[in-house]
Image (cartoon, rainbow, N blue to C red; front, side, top):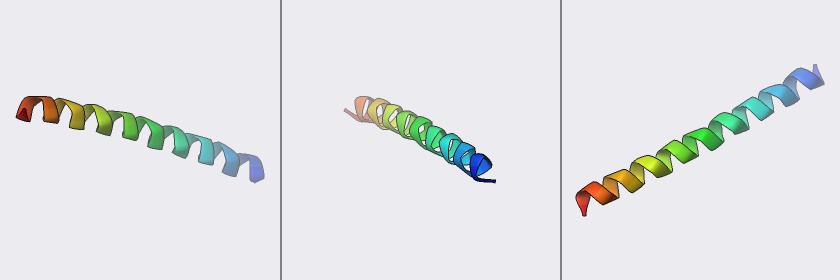
Length: 35
């Protein structure tokens, strides 16, 4: 049970990290386009 929970936590943090990367990329491109 604990192992499953830690695995889920790792997956969640990984997705959060990827989402942050994509968000930063999008804002960077948007700022580039607006300016």
